[in-house]
Length: 293
Image 1: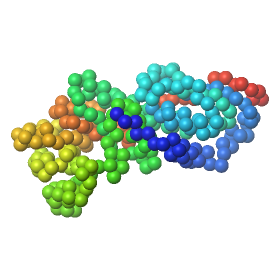
Image 2 (image 1 turned 45 degrees about the vertical axis):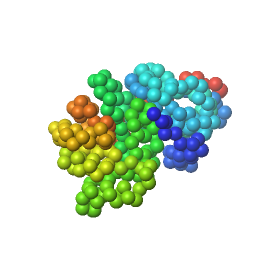
Image 3 (image 1 turned 60 degrees about the vertical axis):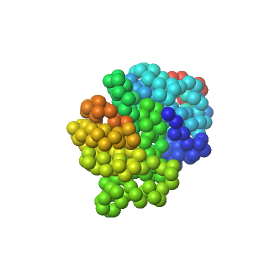
Image 4 (image 1 turned 180 degrees about the horizontal axis):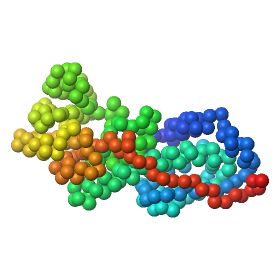
C-alpha cells in the first residue's frame, strides 16, 4: 500500500508549526537552568506493546533542532515494553525543548497504528479478506499524521480529502430528493477518473444505487442482519460482483467479526482516528557529555 508521504519541505513546515505552538517564545525553564553547550544522549522507550509509527516524522523534528537520531525502530515494526523506539544525541537544550512534541506525535501515531494492526490481525486470523479503513474523522491539522498511522498499521486511509472521490451521503440525497438524481448528476459532471460511492440506509437503496451505476455502496449504520439482507439482494440481482461494498457506522472491535463474516470489501471505522488510545512512551536521558554544573 502506498505510504501517503508529503514532500520533505511540507512535512518540515508542518512540524515547525507544532514546535511554534509548544515552544512559544522559548523554553524558559530549560534556558534558565541548563547551560548552553551540554550534549546528551537520550532514548524514547516503549512502556507497553505497540506498533511504532511517527518515527519518520519525529526524526525530521529532531533534525530541525540540530539533534541527531542514532538509531530507531522502523515504522510499522512491533515494539515490546522497554525497547528503544528512538535514540538521539545532541544539545540538551534542544532535546528537552522538543521532548513533549516528539512524544505527542509518537504516542498518537503509534496508538492509531497499534489499534489498526490489532483489527487487521483479527480479520486475517479469522481467515477473512475484508480491508480495514479509516474515515475523515480526524482532528483538524492532524489528518496527514493520522492517516499515515493507519497505513503504518496495515489499514487503508480512505479519502484524505473531499477531492479524492465522489461520496454521495444522506444529506446530499435529502437536498436533491432521491438517489437516482444524485448519482446521475455526479456521473454526468464528474471526470471519468472519479469513482462514485453512495451511502445507503436500507438494503433496497443498496440495490437501487448499484443499478444506477455506483462503483461503491456504503452500508451505513446497518445491523449485521441488514447487511446480510443487502448482500443477498445484490447477489439475487446479479449486482454483488459489480460493486465494492463498504460497511460503516456502529462497528467496534467487539462486533467487527460479525460484519466481516458477511464478506464486505471494506469496513471503515471512525474510532481509529478519533478514539484510539495513545500509547505510553517516555524520554530518558542516558548520558551527559559535558559539564552541566
